[in-house]
Image 1 (spheres, rainbow over the protein chains, first blue to last red):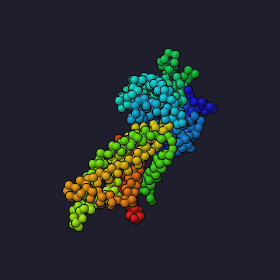
Image 2 (cartoon, each protein chain N blue to C red):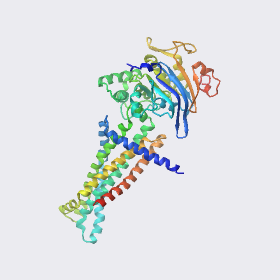
Image 3 (cartoon, rainbow over the protein chains, first blue to last red):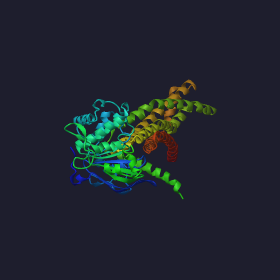
Image 4 (cartoon, chains in turn cyan, orange):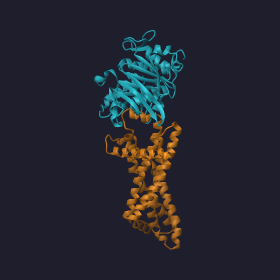
Length: 280
Length: 252
């Protein structure tokens, strides 16, 4: 179901020394990293540290003033908005506020990426099936004809995930998927994200303020045969069976830490350790 | 030295860029005809009642006011002419535009503004739809079609209001009033009476969208965008009507 990636298979998203400025305010500076299939990057940081800007820059919604952003091996920095649409249709994005269109139903919201994709419009029956599938994935098949305003916050977030995943994107960007949710709902949402990663081998960029979100991504794998999440190993340390989860910590637009969970926990930096479980 | 002018010049530049892209999209597919129809219903049919009400009473009032002045010259029977010219040339287009600016420039700005602050505009871009094509162009087309039609309705209802006073209060005959009103109108008057609403419609819709799309700062920002849209659209309606009138007066 995935579009062929060709030579870019190894790297879906790459930042090369990226900087973003709003007038005279530096929002991002000197950010570099690579993200491949099945990999997860968890971006932690205080409010206003540039996490959301990083995510929107990755999707080309904000233009990088310095450096280079590549999606699927293509440099998107010089592209115009119009040229960006076909590339973006292969990226799933979950917005912090959900970004659901409140004037149309849940089913129409989830169908939106399929129906409005540049060039190709699948037949109605296929759209209906895939919308059903996507909503079943987030366990909300019964809400098809409801409007987003009739759902609870957690349900809206799940619908937004269904919309982000309906077109089977190889790369998914999540902006604070658990913000403003109770711990139980937050866990459900993170479990869904891990399930998607391990059943579709997607690349994930997850921006969050909660360390627990990253912990779940790093420590658990979805077992397709048993249909549930399983802890990978005691320390969540690498190896083939690992979850290939890298943590990044941002401060005032800069990356101040990059590494695996164990390194994050061992960090002695006072800012970085705020995001490790010792502190939480 | 002139740094304080920068934001204003930048806004004007942004406005022209938006207007240009909105117009260019009229000729580019995909066309969202459903959205155009929905907007026509909201803007056109939705404003009909208030436009009829305002048109009727303004015709009524002009006739009452003018009949006193005309009575001094013993020319009360010419009142149909004055009502027709004032309404068709100026008051019909301007009053209708101001009503639609109050009703729809605010509606558009607050709708797009809320979409902006809840990331729906970003979501739209992320999902591969051009927000200008999907949101701005349909509103612009719908307003440009409906405002001239609403103006025609307002003009007619206004003359009807004038007739009510002329017949019941001034004692003029039916054909006397209507013939006088009809004959006063020239080709030139009708052209400027329909050109104005077309230009106003463009201003109202694009100004509404412009302030909606540049909304920042949450719910408070939506309120500010709405107010700005109505004020700016209304002011431009007055400025542009003066310009168009000047051109047509010279043409005459």
